[in-house]
Length: 104
Image (tube, rainbow, N blue to C red; front, side):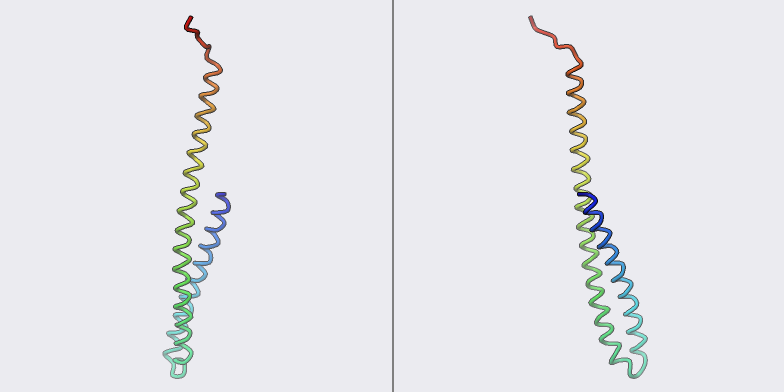
C-alpha cells in the first residue's frame, strides 16, 4: 500500500514541477511578446494559458500534500501494527518458556 502512495506522490510531484516550469516559461514569453507591438494579441492569451497552468500546479501541490499525509498516516499505522505483533509474539514466547506454577 505504501508503494502505491509513494508512486502517486512521485507522479503528482513530477506533474506539479512540470506545470510550474511551463508556467514560468509561458509567463516570461507572454511578457516578452507583449513588449512588441503586435505581440499583445499573442501575449495576452499566452498569459491566460500560463495562469491556467499556475492554477493546475497549485492544485497538484495541494493534492501532493494530501497524499503525503496519507503516506505518513499509513506508515504510522503500519509501524504500530508491527510493534503490537512483535510484542504479542514476545509475550507468547515468554509464557511458553516460563514454568506454570500450581496453587495447590
